[in-house]
Length: 333
Image (cartoon, rainbow, N blue to C red; front, side, top):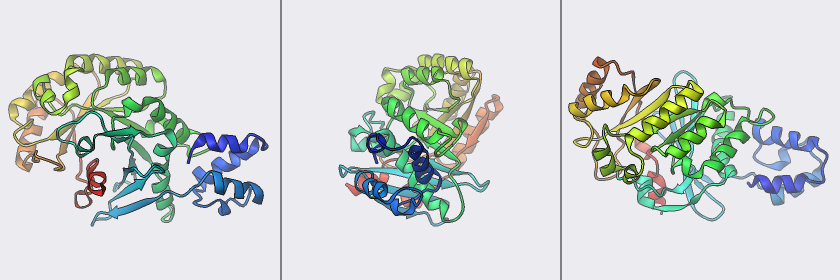
């Protein structure tokens, strides 16, 4: 699907056709133009030829049915991943990719093993949400949240990410509120600053994964360009402009960043940020690193809590279906 193709098809049509088509695609979640019975047959046939609604994907389901992962095949044959996480409080979150592969080469990330292929366009991002929205429609459920935490670094494809959010936020279309979007970055300061000035109150998460620049640079090569002090400065600016709390993501890796000294150092660094919480994540093993032991994570958390740090701990979704970013795409190659 390419939105430019759609506008080209509609340029000689009455203006109300656009609203009818948005309703069909984003609200009724049709999968074939034959379902759009409000449109003239001639237009439906043209749309069928020039704006294909099909999404080629293979879906994998976790044993507990809380997670579904889609390996989506793009028009050029490349593959990306999207993950649906179904929460007990009736939230349904789609984790989307913003790039095919990733140029950042983080040592712990399966996507980094792929290298970088290209950026996704806005509709290729939107299609990931549509795919799972269509799936949930069969059980009368809806997507409640979209997180840019899949393959790629969203702020290295910021124009298409923002365009995808606009499409999904459109009140005549998918109509998902701005507060239901979250963008996760490894710490691209230019992107944080641009998001702060963009206006809509989108949630921000920063994948810190280390308490200091030394450890961070060992596992995140681009950390040499973006030191923690500069990231913290950008976060303070974001919080000042938006009054939104920032999520600090911290993957727990055995012997790398999970010592109690790391916990104490992280707590001191976090005190420089006015509105935040730390999200501790048990590592979903993709390479040479190993996940921290449960007892060590508990002790790490206790150090942070004693120092007044607000903490959440992420539930392990989809380990049995390779739900970590890039695992399926790497295997599919």
